[in-house]
Image (cartoon, rainbow, N blue to C red; front, side):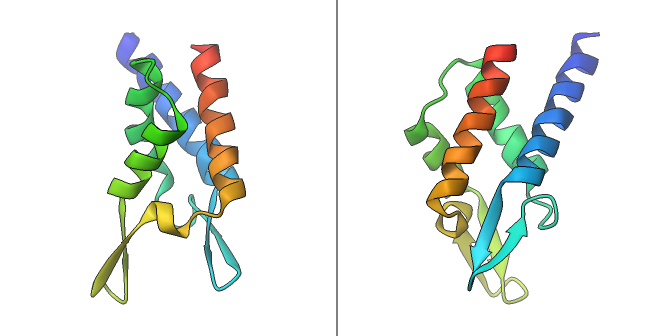
Length: 102
């Protein structure tokens, strides 16, 4: 039962992130759900929420460790480098909300 709850929470977190957080490339906004990055972000952030170690620095560290392949994989760039400041704020708000609800 706990596993089902964890799965449901992860899915809800991923959906919220995917719909509200985007990467910016040359003023084009690609939401994380469309970029297929929302699930990995949710999975990585979930441990911060459950360990009660959520902070902007830790979130930035995690985003810095998630690589986004560009040019058919010729190069990888940290997801953090693609997120505008407002999206980082939005992500923090989403994560804080989920932490409060747990």
